[in-house]
Length: 229
Image (tube, rainbow, N blue to C red; front, side, top):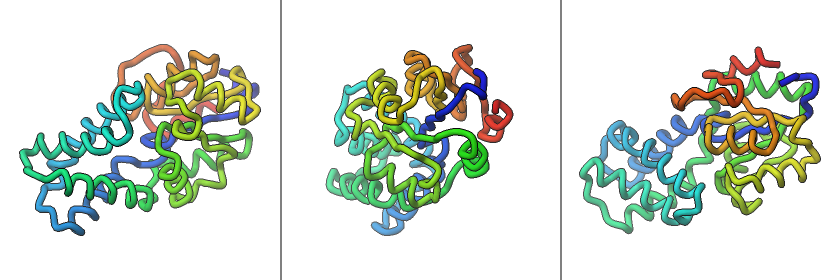
């Protein structure tokens, strides 16, 4: 990768710029207090986070619907902590979670500094598998809307990363060329392999201890990305 030939940088949002774990924990804390649910938040999150990732993988692969994702990730978590709860309450939590999640604005360390630096030299965009309305609220409420020329969501494009078509459409609609573009994301499967297969460069922000590989540069903090440019 030669930074001089790069014109466009595409970012993932959740787990890459937007601090999903922190914002999600604050969302559940608010909901549990609101509905007076006597559950240990720490125990709940210990199971919820990996279960959520598992269900998102199934959703990416079109093996489950959006509704199944939203319900089952909660139902399975309550099951794991042996907490009996009605489907009605699970649905209530699910709806409140979607309503509240994007109101929390926390970004990962170094996100603003990185965006400030890169936006001076490159056009910046987002490609995310998250839901259209929710992702736009996250971007707006966390104060990073002005950095991005385009936000491409799987819901709007009609394909989820790593499907080739979401990258093809993002390149086409942004007027970018694959050989002059970089994808920065936390998921080896969705972000890195998906982008590299389309001829893009990539930087893997490996924040979840995924397996090592030689497809692209690997970093473990956003600050490390600066050195690559």
